[in-house]
Image 1 (tube, rainbow, N blue to C red):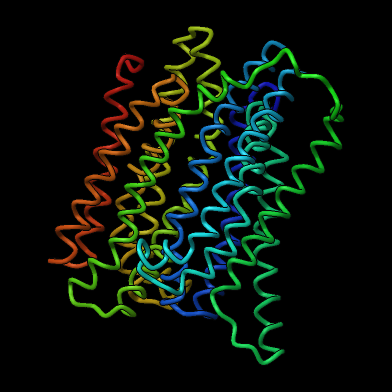
Image 2: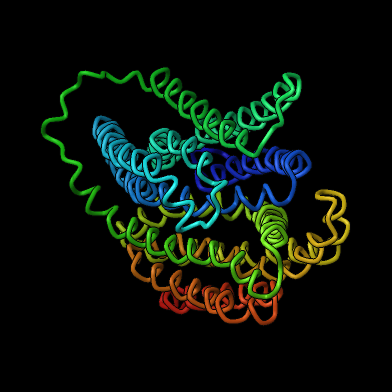
Length: 436
């Protein structure tokens, strides 16, 4: 049996993986319900606003969450518990103010963003509702970073489950309530569900924090400063923002490129919805374990780097490579052979099955890239992860801009696989000194 205290990385990874699998299982039920209730085109419209959501998360949360995780891990190692709480509260206040500003911007400019950038006016009400979720998401991320830094994954895992259950349940209830009132349900209900889920998740984290930590709200932190955390978070935030700008350009350009290939607006959004909302989500579902491991690899590798423990870094790296490739081959084979069945059984779509089979080759490189990027960040090489991610996205953008208009969506699938393959080899190249 795994001892949580002796093996915090393994135990935490397994716990986050099991909770992630459970949540993604709920998420699949949710996606199936949304696809059948609102249609493929509606899913495509909802997927269009994803870049705006990810940009908000990148600007307001990602860098500080990682900073809190790293600084809390270091403070816990020194047994400075008051400092741990300061890092959480200081980082949360900073992120909340950033998120509040971003929310005001998105709500006020929802029409401009939808018409100019997304080129779809039906996105306007969706953005206005989800604008309220950014402060909650920022606080949620900061509290998660605090518990990850302490290697206490029970609370984040539980809050993740609460979020998904609340989100899915609220959408179903709103859907049938609308029908009972003679109102035609629209994709707008998914935004209300996402907002309710985010609020429930944050309240869960807040409840456990005050129940278990018993912090003094009026404690003086005058002799502490969050400036080192802000300094640490800036390159990580810049990294993620740059990646999201390119990713946003990619996401918005795919439906436009499909139109150039010859599809109508409705058909383009439907194909985009099937590809991103169904097939690609299934591939990402299988990456739950490696995503969970990458969250906890960063503080583990950071501690080893701080102690100059190269043996521990090398050992972690070898285990990471072996596990990522093994899982990638297992899941890749599973998707390749069962793709038609999965497409019809889960999504009632032959097109989804075709996409799943072609994306199955993505698994080994996707898993390897995810975990090795986290190790690079743990070694304070975030500039290299930026270079790798930008290279990956530029390759994909090339396929979107120049090949989809000529050869269709299939060319983009091959671009995805090629970009992940190159990214994985770049990660291994930059970590080569720890492999010898």
